Length: 447
Image 1 (spheres, rainbow, N blue to C red):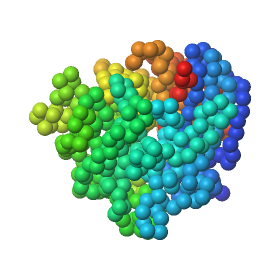
Image 2: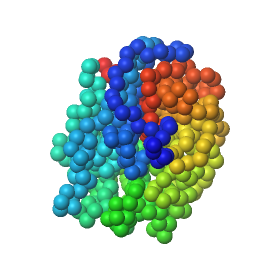
Image 3: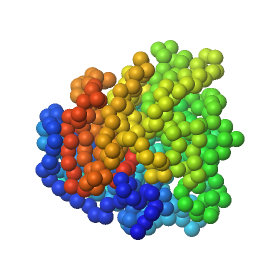
Image 4: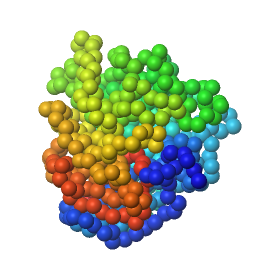
């Protein structure tokens, strides 16, 4: 029997694909919700993997229609790595951009639903009725994308443009490239960014007029890569330093201004915005003092804020909350704009210590925090904000999969985002375990 933490309990993979209809519900599903809740995560096809992050991607989806939980289905993303065992690099050492496991996020842009991982091209998923979550194939923006694509692209709510980046570490790879796609899905900008060394860059910040990169001290470790050690070939290297790079969106090929900060690491950003005059940028993220061996997330990440003053070339850093948290989200219609509320999850990582699962709502104006705590043995994941009105930042719900150790099954839990202390609005009981995974979205039906 395995004793590997990321293959046990809430993290244990499932071994098949299911389609189950007419799910049982406790409470009442808001009748205005019609669409799919999708969440991606690692689920190794062979039931084993060297690291939690390396399992084959599996998307889990629940279909809601006007107050009914119509179906649950889970599907592996049929990547080249899954179907033909593709290696990360070919015999010449060049990266195979088809070879990622597409296990980190699932987003929709320009009518396409994409499963993402930062080491390769995205994979497009079929969402047509009857074919939901089938894999269409790798997507490279009609041959224009020549780098991997981050798992954390950001859609500008004003222009509809998709902003993202790709990073690399091999001799044939650019360490960092900034990309932008139009609202119609056309890749319009691919601009290399000069950084001192290849680092693990998982996320970034977007404001209404700027893009902000994070050059942090998780540095590519060639001996570790050659040795094939467990985990990812990056090593915590505080001597590398840490800095934030600000690029003007109106001058995408212009200079990047770098601002030094204290050594730290950020897997996920919450949001960013700027003052009306564009002088002060405010960034929110879950910050770690350091990251452990093999990039294991067993430290204590918490909410921090950076304020960059472009006029004085200064950065102010401050911790906003000391609760352990990860997977921060906002109402995505406010991405890059001032958002009063942010949300994050407290959950146990495979290597981490036990903790009580909770979802937190941060009031970024007042500093107050309200939490929904789950019973012992119930492990929540990332909570996605689902709007209840056409007004960005207004009322809404939070959706998350919650694993129950007592039953070895999971629920889709819907919480009232305005009253997190209340019991769940609805709990949709699923026929099986949804392993703790990464990121997802509510995809309402498009008319």
